[in-house]
Length: 259
Image 1 (tube, rainbow, N blue to C red):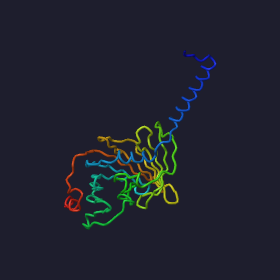
Image 2 (tube, helix red, strand yellow):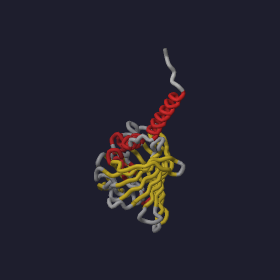
Image 3 (cartoon, helix red, strand yellow):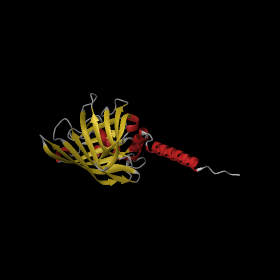
Image 4 (tube, rainbow, N blue to C red):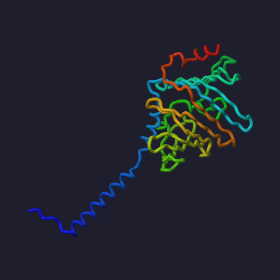
């Protein structure tokens, strides 16, 4: 014969179940996020994989000495082969200059001398506040380790604020801080630091273009923290993932379009 618990026993059992549910709920809400997975997700979402990518970049640089400068650049990327090409179309003084990456090699082409010279991904892109490395696919998960993180707000967005330390000497900056949306892992802001942890540059990515499963910043704002009043804004238009000829990512192509 089944005996039902008395009122006191039922009350104790109810309190116990409530406590267990509360503990489990708090544990679920406070579960430790996998920051390595978040970095890998950022890399994956920005990788065009088997598809080619091209766009037109309008680059506006504000310089306290030089004033306002504008460039128009044609951008091409082939992530699966670790290649990109940046061809400057305006202003006339820089027309035809190009940056061609093929694997570990990055060349700068000068149409005046008609010569290619080796340069580095760490260098400034044509004197702007952007770096050459800003135009290749990201590899945060391979190049950095997470030093610390915390949850915070950036404007209206819930974000992870992640401090990174480089794991190799190939990166442009040895220390970085990221503001990454909690819900979809988009990078909204970065701070770049030197070896002595001096703030060198702040970058904002206020909006993105979604191309299939890939996300590319439509607007990028780079602020030089060493020169007051100096910053560069880059806006992407004519975004395409149509296949590109293999010849686009060659020195001969860069030379040919300058004839």
